[in-house]
Image (cartoon, rainbow, N blue to C red):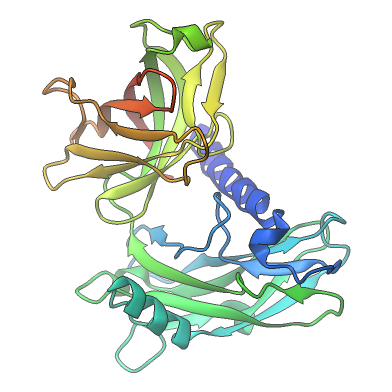
Length: 324
């Protein structure tokens, strides 16, 4: 039951981040003076457009997946009625993305590509009382994980109900369909920090149990971070009084090499005036910054930088709890 709750909590945390970004109207390209609710996709926790990978377990049978999140952003709150959003393929957007990034993603649906079924014919329902709905597919994920890299590209074509504006900047999404990497999962985090005692952050060598966090696949060797304790993606810490906290504009993403060594920690959020960044601690020992495939435990030692302050040393032990 605890693991099921963590899966639900991880999804709720991610949705909360997406809705936070969606409510920042300028990033949604709301027309000047517009008062209509905005329908969008492709928003994320930092309010900028980027491809949104869907990492899944390999399955030899048909499974239904939430492929693309569709968001209603409205000062009036959740939908007052069921809102029906039709989405259509956006192969031109995928071609542009490939050209700009050097990727070679192939859109499923053509000859020789894996078969899939759009649930409800590609119509997304944002239910009354909610702000979100999903474009859903049914497919056999194991068919996608070979030499060819696949991505689904869809844009909002229309909204059945009147009174809604389709976001101009965030009206389409590109979703690489990828296997979960070996680091993906829910972890129990034990943490200690040193260097920021003068700023109210615990400064000692005691490892405290923080609670559950998650790593979410970006690529075969990299993961984004979800703070399940707080329901966001911020770097965890403890106040000197012992309470769990998170540092604004600081979300650690982790990169491993082929030998399971943690080789990079970088900030997923663009820096603000504090210029908060991360880097691997050069003083880390040979037993740190490693992933152990047998125990699925990660031991990390990295630095948290900020203008005008000394580096904070972050030491973390992530003990695997279960799949995300």
